[in-house]
Length: 203
Image (cartoon, rainbow, N blue to C red):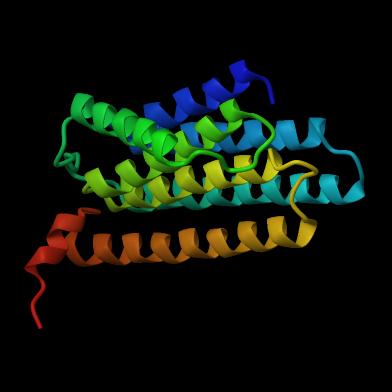
């Protein structure tokens, strides 16, 4: 994958860290996933690679449908403000990405730029999940990190095996589905998808 396309993926990931609207965040994560699908199809060498790209496409569409359904079913009466302001989130995300790049000498991918992009997306996903109170953003953080793992699979020398790619895609789709169900249950109970509301629970 070209360096320019890699950094477009990274820029989309950073935008998810700072953006406020849930629907826009869903659109950005979906666009990122579809870029990965396009690259997988472009780089496909045999039928297995096409099947793997198809699995990525199904995952992208299924998650987008799930998230947009959740957004429509859980309309917030007022925005759930993050505990950390956008500039601080962006700074923390970039600092974490640079730290991971410094700590991890190599991932064995085709290029060092690809390794930096993977580590950046994983870092951005973790920061998104850790600094946002809105439960849907926390789920999107998981998917953002998973997009980084999908990029790593595509950038492995020779590519990852079909079984591994399908297994990872299925496992993480199930994680996102379960997290989405929890988001809806929290909204139904508290009237807002705010993880801070869980602090009111007692044994």
